[in-house]
Image (tube, rainbow, N blue to C red; front, side, top):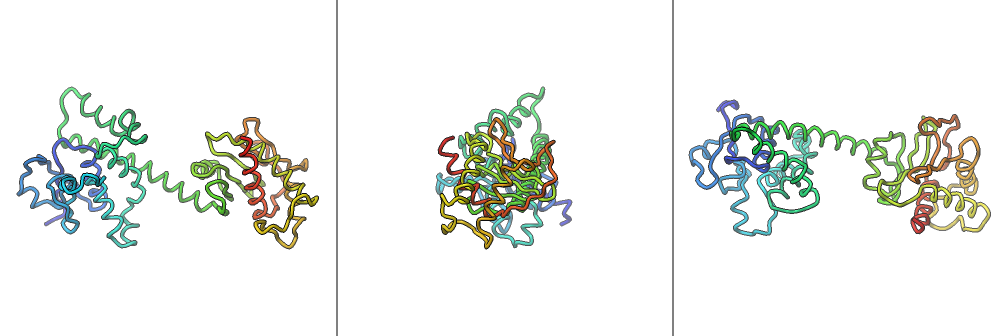
Length: 330
């Protein structure tokens, strides 16, 4: 049979489970024709001739692309699955790595989770938001706010257009996450403190979604500093003060430089002195924003010509220790 003659099957009055499963099949297999059947009494001939059957039919069979979950619920109603999650898990688990990369669907995982929560009546914070302001609310508005009830095909077409936009948003977000991960050079103390190098403001914000404090270093721009996660009480000015005090304690012998955790090079004290100079000398003195969200030098309109030459391994550890001390007072 010609691929153009193939068709998929979903139920009438399609919900997000049926729409999203159909969207994935169209994206992966190129199926563009769809037939709609009653969930209670689906036409057996239509089911038998279909390329795939989704969210209807009471059959789960990977080999024939039959993905329904309603029969599963009779076996164990604690199973939180839906047609979309069953299809997605199959494609992500049971295909080769090469094919999985070619499918281009891994970034849809947050969407799959939301559809699954909605189909199983879970009231997670994300689902509650979706019901009021997100995709679930939007689908309901589309169906009920037209002058005449939409056809099943109109609902599916609207859903495909909506998901195409969502797909692009999630892809862009995944790309930024990948770029952010490539910029992380030191993460021993994640999710508290990480260091990123040669990044930009967007990467910094992405990394701060999962870390309390970021040390950002851009050698080409002579830029270095620290920035806190949004919504935290941590004051970067306090972190900076503790960094200076720690350097002075190490230099003047008030703290042992040779403790096991310190990443000390052969230069030892000189590395510490270099960091103290970086933080305090007039040409590179770090600026602490009055709101506490940031401290550093070389950003925005305050560019400097002095290169960043400190021992970054040692700086990372000093920032982490200072973060811990400042956190006690935040």
